[in-house]
Image (tube, rainbow, N blue to C red):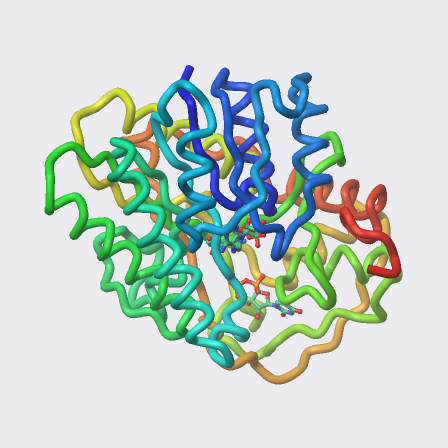
Length: 348
Ligand code: NAD
Ligand code: UDP
């Protein structure tokens, strides 16, 4: 059992991972500025885990760029923080092209501040949310961790920069235990339907969009390109159930806390991919709803195919995914049906 600081723990991946970490017996302090989330997510996490807010999970409203907020987080409990799981950040690729300063400030500047606070408080263990987007246009799929890092968006470059920063920090002094987890395409929701992905406004990502079309909130899905060099012409992605991803964090943390100091860089994906049309068909079959779609022009910056080589995750973390595309569609749909506006009300 460890005392953990979770940054961005009310977000999509953070909330599911908080639940998995509580179930694994850890105690959590969550630092959140709620810029892209609601504290209702953590209220439900506590309810699912059967714990009281303020008991094994403490919520602190604050920003990772603010030293006072970080001091408050690190001095919160009498016990020291053993490790940080760092989700806080901005994640919209298109927005990062428009607002690069904001992305570098939050994702890179925020991580610098966090690492400074960790140093001051003698905490040297961190799990960082990196992304498959660091690979840019992959030369070979499945993508191994040794593939060239060549991101094609400001967002991807902030993730690559933080990975480099973490390596520099680990080389500057002994004792750092670091995991950079390169997520592929996290989707789905907890099987209870109580927590899930709750995007503000128009979703950018495929799964939330498909869910909203299936329940009639949006007229049709626009599929970005039908002329890609794939079997049916639509792009292929390695979709990973968010609870598998959450369990991947628990596994990484255990390895870091058990082994000698190191920097682990590991893909978290299933190791196989589905096209957009395959996802639409699976979703229709699971939900018994129609998902009308129209094929439109390609989206700038998209890649044809992105699939993880998941061998290293299996070998180093002893972790493999357990949920398939049907589970992802079923759980995403159940969440959408029960929470048509996510954690927000219709008028938010
Ligand atoms: P999310 O937006 O749902 O969660 C991020 C959380 O961080 C939000 O709750 C937000 O309020 C919080 N936050 C943002 N800036 C903050 C700040 N300055 N201080 C404190 N809290 C702050 O996103 P997510 O999908 O859960 O992603 C979590 C992490 O994983 C992010 O770093 C993201 O870049 C990375 N990632 C996500 C995906 C994906 O497809 N969802 C893929 C690869 C990597
Ligand atoms: N996509 C789509 N229509 C949408 C959203 C996404 O056709 O409204 C496609 C997108 O082109 C990509 C796949 O679905 O091939 C997954 O996109 P997403 O944005 O979810 O993840 P990405 O892999 O781009 O980060």
